[in-house]
Amino acid sequence: MKIFYHTSATATGGRDGHTQVDDGSIGFDLVGFQNESGKVGTNPEQLFAMGYAACFDSAMNHVAPSLGLKPSKSSTSVAVGIGQKADGAFGLDIDITITVEGLSVDDAKKLISKSHEVCPYSNATRGNLDVRLHVKVIEAFDL
Image 1: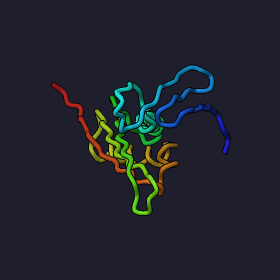
Image 2: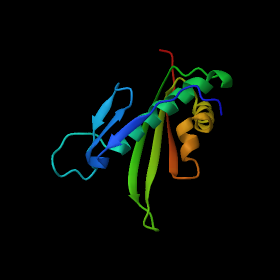
Image 3: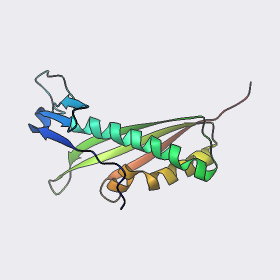
Image 4: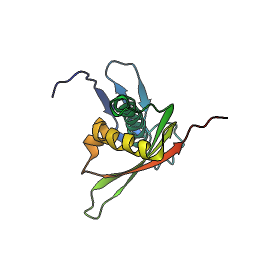
């Protein structure tokens, strides 16, 4: 694989610590999802959800021209759940809701399906966790 971008981050203190991109451009104090201390912060699932949402929306922008599609607008929301599997290990559960404006339902589904094939987050999670795709279409109309 030809790498055209690379970044790195470091976390200390686990879920109740701090994480920061190694170049210092962004960092977060972390809190566990069961935060009872009142400490303000972010958790890893939130960071994953933000990254996946941005990546998937970018994948749609990337593949739309190759499909001859021109959505007027799109947004991607990713909900991430964490839970314990039957074998005792922990796993993630993903719901992705994509809102597309200016396409038919069939064209939106085609775009989303192809984007799911291309998105690096989708490729990383495929076969490893449940990822469900939901489509909302806002069709353009003339007044």
